[in-house]
Image (cartoon, rainbow, N blue to C red; front, side):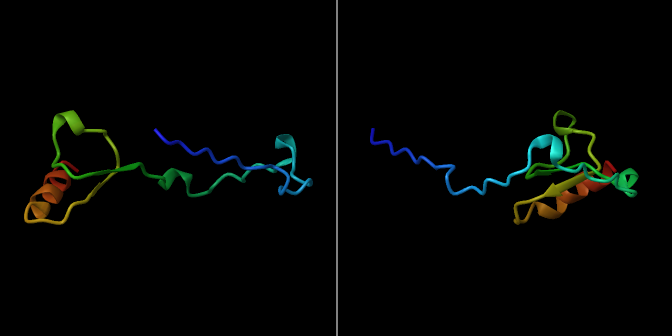
Length: 76
């Protein structure tokens, strides 16, 4: 097997990189209560795939797509 290894050097990085303790924290997001969880699937809803998420992104465009989308929509 022919393997190639790419080694990236750190010499091109600027020496003014901040230390972790110097990096300012993000301010609290006022709309954090509106955050949602999501996942992608090509399958219709089933108890085995029920991730209790807020959004299911259904992919795979074919003749079964409307039924797959409806299966998730009907489960809320």
